[in-house]
View 1 (cartoon, rainbow, N blue to C red):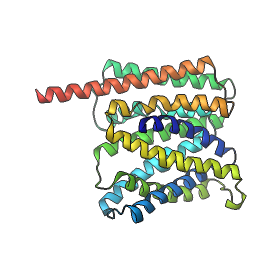
View 2: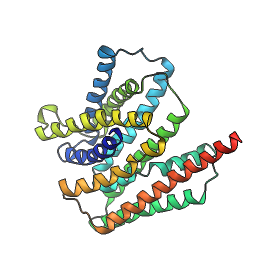
View 3: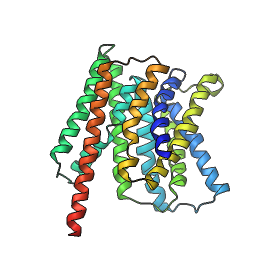
Length: 299
């Protein structure tokens, strides 16, 4: 149930974000309001209902770094990029993070034993996204589209870097409690960036539909989905818990075509399927190589 919630609900949040961006001129404002309320909810719960020890300074440093990577750049910048891209394309770029994890480990950690399957999967994933992007170029190709593409790729790389660093640095804090701190710190930083780079809407001028969209993103996207995501990581094997990455973009593309009337063609669906196959091959090859290393070490 947790995996299903993560897979489906996170896919719908792309559409909810796109809907909110039609009302809010500032994408970063959508992100910081969402994170402020969600982070506050987590911290209040673990302060008054299920009290937790206050994090140490070393834990705070790790949480601050993860807040920048996951909530400021990966979430905030991806929402900004969504302002200029079709929903399905933005979601598809976000699903490429396993490929950039491989690249980060290859560049910065010297893990250069890439298998043929990893290379083929990476090429397939990138080719699928390029094909979907090419299909969307027929509607328009301008500086805003390219800018949105750059922002989305930056956000995806940031999520990947956060994933790599989190696997190498552990903190002695309840993961949900830590997430609350990270969201709140991210909201504060995004508030500053929103007022520096964009023109946030006065709260009294925000339409009811805008608050409903942000409320959905807060409750469903930042609280329920994150709880389900962490729970599934703890309870399921990695090969199963990572399945959400293949389902999210498909849910986003189908939902966007129904709710937002975004273009959905056979070509875009084929590009999406090719991308998902590529991401699966990369994940499969990496897990296969790691299992081989573990087996050889045991022998």
